Length: 304
Image (cartoon, rainbow, N blue to C red; front, top):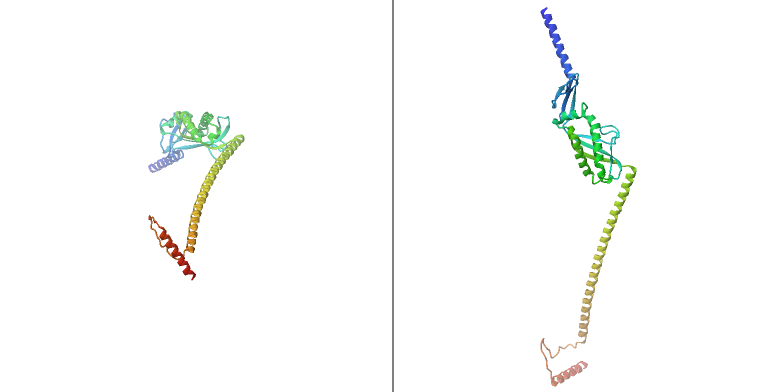
């Protein structure tokens, strides 16, 4: 009897242990790395302890809510297969010219561990996905339409997009920080302008293109003008050099011609009276008479 009692007791304990182990495993949930958790009890309310990443046993009347401490991106986009809602979920922004343009918007945020209880107090017992798709989206819509009228649609699609994002980030941060959401940035992404806005964009692009073409044509004309000036100067220099060369060649030719004529007229005799450089000769009548006589004699000798 004692052995039977021991066996029965042991069996009950084992069954109870297995039952508790099975119940514990079935009620266990994990708080992953990069998240913190809040345990809510339907009867006692939220526990005031923020749970770090670990396995948590959640009772029958309890529920675990987790919040991301790592950066998260909430996307509100027109593509039906992306974003928080699988539908066209872009945000309409009204700009300074009263144009309503849909933009894809991305919000980067996180929850600091010390703000987890604040988030629960602000949004209640809802998960973070619901917070992203409803509460944050509503705040983003208010913020972008608060900042949007400071810019026109062309600026939001171009050079002022960064300024808009900075202003929207600051405004959304002020709205969400008291609720425990720390906003890192708000970014405009793809724009979906209306037909009339597209027409304005195309006209502006065409005007800008024509302006750039006019500038290029002006630059080409200026380069052509400078090229023509360089060519003209080069031609003038070539003409001047050619003229100077021809002149020098003409003078040389004349000298050669004169030398040739002098050679043809030479009688083969050197002059009897020679003067050196810087000398002055004074000839009397007798010298001239003697010179003529010598010339006559020479001429008669050549005839004979």
